[in-house]
Image 1 (cartoon, rainbow, N blue to C red):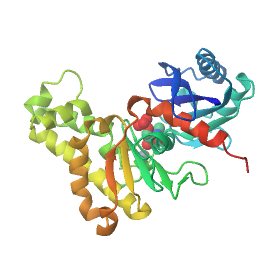
Image 2 (image 1 turned 180 degrees about the horizontal axis):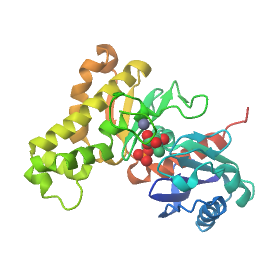
Image 3 (image 1 turned 45 degrees about the horizontal axis):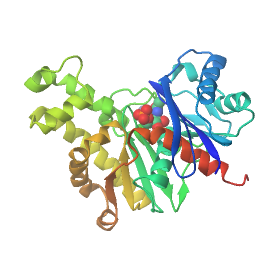
Image 4 (image 1 turned 90 degrees about the vertical axis):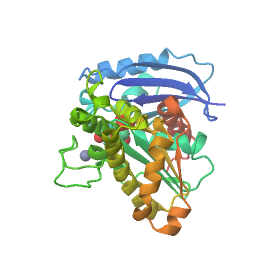
Length: 314
Ligand code: BMX
Ligand code: ZN
């Protein structure tokens, strides 16, 4: 069975792994994201990390998951705001050159994670599903009729940058009032911090309030935290309801750090989706928590490699 390298690039860490088409990870490692602003140093670092993995067989390709926007066809990272040192990085060519010409496949991180959940996680067995990560940002991976939806520039699924309030707060993408300014983990923490003075529980937080603090306070019955969670749940319900009408999915799988709150998050979202989707479509969609947990990044990248390397070009 061929093996594949998986690379998951995030704003804070780069994780690499080696695995097979059954989604089994044989070794993995992580390092803080190098932000060197120098192509060779970044690429040398990732290539060295891959070489340092235990390799019990031949490697057939490399899957890379990275925040967008990307130029996947050219294998180039464009200008993700959380990876300033990586802008315009020709990552596929650079890694391929350093690793004996292995084919490299670059994918948006949320799309890759969706592919991982579809193959080996909570989306297994579906023909139509949408994966949504609610974490630092909000991203989506869309599977329609057993096909990954990538769009003309491979950037489909930028759900977090769908504008819901054009007069709203500036977003790092350059627009205003994007969904992720209202409902990401970052947004939930920021709103909790803004309102901390109204809540004894939130004011007792050490350091700035995070989304974890808001959810703990919500579970303890804090009314201010409840307003913050319900506010975010409202926007997620709007987004999931809209996706339900657009794609008629069988399952919406929610991953990312905020999804670790499970039904505490999903129950209010499910309830609030009712006015935002057509009844029959809503009746056929399940809203579930992702299953791959902390390995979703590398498993997503592995799914990309398995999917693309196994395909005849053209
Ligand atoms: C953002 C966007 C997406 C990404 C999503 C989830 C940036 C830098 N990235 O909407 O490309 O898929 O976040 O990313 O704008 P995460 O880092 O929150 O998991
Ligand atoms: Zn935006």
